[in-house]
Image (cartoon, rainbow, N blue to C red; front, side, top):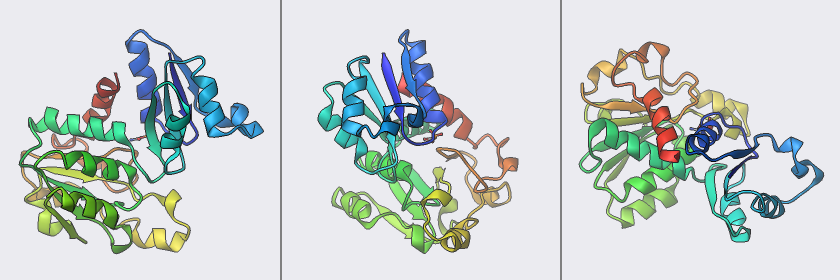
Length: 253
Ligand code: CP
């Protein structure tokens, strides 16, 4: 029995964990809207997790605060799976992302992987870059100045000897890229709407831009997308983001 505890919005992570457990023959306690649970009466995260583990064998937690999964795990006796803690980490996404690369391209070692968009607040790229540091991949980071990959992650990967480079535009690196990992600029993370609007449409991947990319490469996205990949690109065989979503089900199983 899986307790699916979501304090924050989700479509893919919540529903794929549910589908994964049901396909394995288990069942799910769905708490997709904590407003209808005793959280709305002021119950703390440690108490809520200690409640759910009385009834479930594993807890999947999405929460808006960095470190929330670690806090829950500190109090829980049963396994807690981090399904996204604010702008921190999204480790099961990184597992399904690395599975996607292997499934689509056969290997990870030797590839050039370019991450594009919101690298500051994007928890998926934080987890994926750390996971990729276990391989011999080259990482390019393409972002607006205000959305650069956090320096502590770049430093952590440098110590491990990962080859990394930062850019403001995609043009210098697109032709060498084997995996283009596109992320959404997350409006909900900005305190000042003007800052968001200054970078919201910084990058749009479309068929025209992709003419200078390799024939054998893939474009990934954790989804949801807004405008950063045009709908016209969806039919291109290099568009792997819908296949990536389905791989997430199998990885979570
Ligand atoms: N990729 C991902 O985490 O999507 P959801 O927020 O819809 O779960």
